[in-house]
Image (cartoon, rainbow, N blue to C red; front, side, top):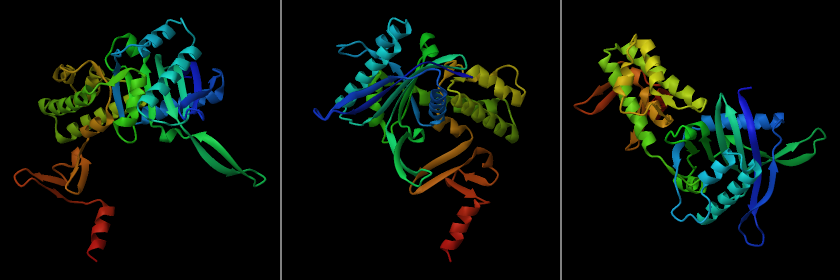
Length: 336
């Protein structure tokens, strides 16, 4: 199996009837050899990788260090000076504290897992409420049950332990909250981390570098489109396995399309770090033009520009032929 679980734990966090605050209601060290646990963590890993709206962060030192920082707690655990159950309990207490400071009260399960995937070590933190479901059994008796709906996962972070050991920037990634930054803020606070805002900018620079490459290499329209598609494919593949974009690797990928054996893209993108985390909302732009405003939302593949989509820079207008069938149908219906 490509995924190996090293340690796993789960905490039930619920309301304290006395204080109306949150407390740890239950803790359970999960059986590492259990097939159901492996399936759960494998599902969690895949679900996390598939989430497009992720941010990247780095650890910070608290201004008022009244207790051990998260990175110090982590270092103690990784040195095997404390067991995982103790470490996970410390994490649960820190999460409750961060929720309280941000006036965020939510019951749910905190799942922590230290695992290895394709030779790299990760530490995954997930907080999720359970969903209530109703079902009939074979006797047609109605039963109520609860389950984890991972598709709706909104609060999670993952540490790339190997990236941290290699002192790479942004070893920590997190899912952006469903209502903007406020929800995910307390999750970063509990980890003593702050968002690294350069990730988006670096991805934008990479997209620009690919376009510059297409021009400098004097590629024809078909070759340009193929380079863009291969870049997009590489980015999505790296995201799916939880890996960063490697500029040298990408240079080889696009070079195989254009016949460039000199690593030209690597030279053009020399101001970027050797590796950077993929930001899907930005990398999607390598194959698409999109924008919205003034009541209009528009997006189309870059390969269509100059073909079925014509741009007039003087009048700042687009002429679109061969409209999508569903849009064409709606327009025809609107005029009777």
